Image 1 (cartoon, helix red, strand yellow):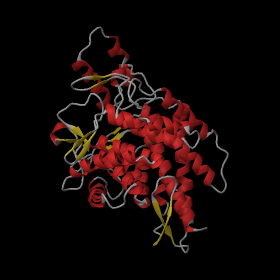
Image 2 (tube, helix red, strand yellow; image 1 turned 90 degrees about the vertical axis):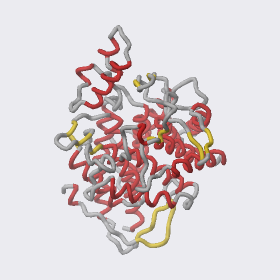
Image 3 (cartoon, helix red, strand yellow; image 1 turned 120 degrees about the horizontal axis):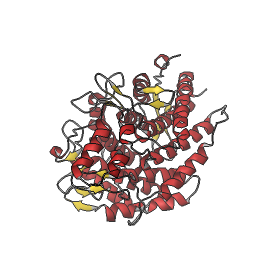
Image 4 (tube, rainbow, N blue to C red; image 1 turned 180 degrees about the vertical axis):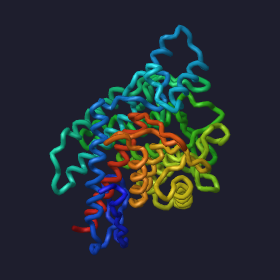
Length: 439
C-alpha cells in the first residue's frame, strides 16, 4: 500500500476532553462507533519511516552537514588572512549553491546542538510509542539510552561563561556586523535544548534542574527589557541594535512557559506573557509576522517555518497558561498559516508570496503546528507530500525542492532532526487518537 492510499478517519468530535501527555493540551474524544483501524494503519505505516529516520542519524552518530556550517571549511580556515567578505562569500556559497559543495570546500561535518535536542526528544517519543503498542516489537536499539546519551551531550556541550544554561551552533558564523564564535549561545538552540532536558527529566530529574537555570540566561544575558507593548528579548549576543527578531523572541517566551509548567514559578509566566504581548502587537493584518521589525531589516518576509515557530509558541501558552488571552491572535494566525503558507496537497509555500523553494523545515514545522491543533488530517497531508517529494531513501530526506530542481543534500539537523521529531510527535497524537476511538 502506498502512503497516499491510506485513508484518514474523519471521526465525529464530541464535547468531552481528556488531558494528553505532559503538555497541558486537551485532545477531543471520538465516538465509539468510528472505525479506529485506519488510524492504526497510519501509525503502523509511518512508524517504519520514523525508525528509518532515526537509524540514518544513529549510524552517523547524529553527525552531518548543517545549514550554516560554511565557516567550518578547512580551506577557509587554512588561509593566512581573515576577511569578513571572504567569510561571507564562502559561508553563503556553501549554504546556497544548487548542489552540495561541502566536499569541495572540505567543510567538517559536526553534531549540531539543536539537532542533538531534536534527536533526544524523537528517541524519547519513539520509546513512548513502543511502550504504548499492544504488540511492541523488539527494537534494534535502546531509545531511552539514546535519549540519555544525547541529553548528557547537551549538558556537556553547553556554552560556558553565561548566567545560566544555554547553547549555540558550536561553529563560527559570519554575521554582517560581527563574527560569532563557537561559544556564542542563541535563544533558539537554547529553547530546544531546554525542552529536551525537561523531557529527559523523566529519566533523571537533574536534567530539569540544569534547564531551570536557562531563565537567568534569557533574562540577564539576552537583555530582557520591558517596552510599552510588553517586553523584548534578544536573539543572540551579536544581534544588531537597529532591528528585532520576532520568532526567536516567541521561542524565548515558549521556553519560559515550558519552565513555568515544570516548576510553577510565577515570574516565568509573567515574563513570557510580556514577551508574547509584544509579539502579538506586531502581527500584520494578514495574520502573519515578518522575520524582523522593521520588516525591511531582513530579506525574509512572512516565511513559513518562522511563522510556525511563533504560532507554536502561542499554542503552548494557550495550552499551559491561558486559553483565552491570545485567542484573537491565534485564530487569524492559523488561518493565514493554513491558507497562505500551505497548498491543499500539503506542499509548503516559502512565504506569503512565493511557493518555492519548498523547504522540509517548513513541512515539519507545519506538522508540529497542526498536530498540536489536533488537525491530524492536515498534518498527514503535509507528511505525505514530504514522502512523495523530499524522501531520498528510507529515512533519508532532502533539503529543498525548487521549481526546476531538488537540492539533494541531507542536512542532519535541518532534514533528519526535524523530521524525526515532527513525525514522532504526529505519531504519538495519532496513537492517542486511535486509543480514544476504541478497538
